[in-house]
Image: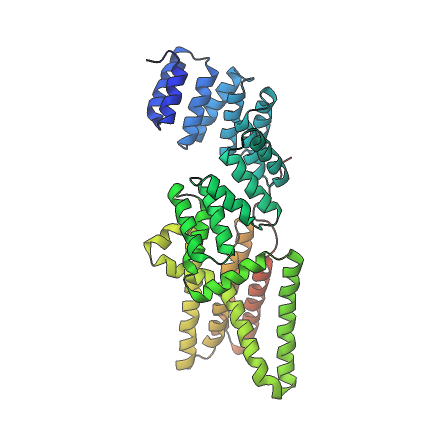
Length: 416
């Protein structure tokens, strides 16, 4: 048996033998209840197993026993971050660095916590500090690359990610970043291969899952064209994107009025109006509809998030109901069913908008979508003098919901 039981614990952990490591720590703590490092190690194992309450208890005990030990402070911060206590994690990481300024794990813990808080400039400084000390530190190099991309409004540095993937081929985030740069370059097949490699290394990595879902959808040639357009469009400055969106709407209205006042130009203008309307419909509904297609296959169901599945099913339900109402209006005396079909069909836009957001913002958009759906159905059964009003209410809710989906925060954070 090893003279130092902590070394034995570390060997167990290096071999992935958590149960044995816990058993050794339990024995050590029974013999030496004031061993702060042992409590800290046990806290890390419990946190790894998802037992955050037990981890927090052990981390608190360790901090009471060894409040000046950098590793103990690091563990307290790591557990706090897993619990969502971002400010507490930052403070613990800073305390650990006061006792050991070269403690790379503590610096990276602070960087991860500040990334959670959206403090990207500080993340870059911290990650660069670690890279300066340890040029081959994977986590620091990758974290710095991610932070720089966020600082550039999501614009990926192709050479940086290519270099990271070559230097750290077994790092899933580096491979996913390489996949996204290939996606932006239109190399869909190569991007898919990178995302698959990233998921083979870390099956839970959301960035790789999202990329692979897009790559699978891009097998549809129409979606592939849309994807390339939006990847290009997202790289434009915010002011340019806003101007383009407003300009497109103004141009559509101008052409529509021109077609009405100049009938001889209508044959030339109508195809442009149809193309623009089709483009708008595709931009809103292509994702949820292709998610429905992916759900038909086990691979797609595994990759899609619960929100993506739920949104796809609801959009599909709206369009199916709209189609049924449209057929009913065409082949039965119930003509107002056509009004309901129109409203329910466009409610799918509001549903899509809701499932693009999270938290309170989603709830607000879901309420608007619900009102739009009820008003659309009411338009089909109310007397004619009220049916039009109900449909107008539905359209207003849909327009308001799609407009609101572009603004506001899902989960604002306030960390000093």
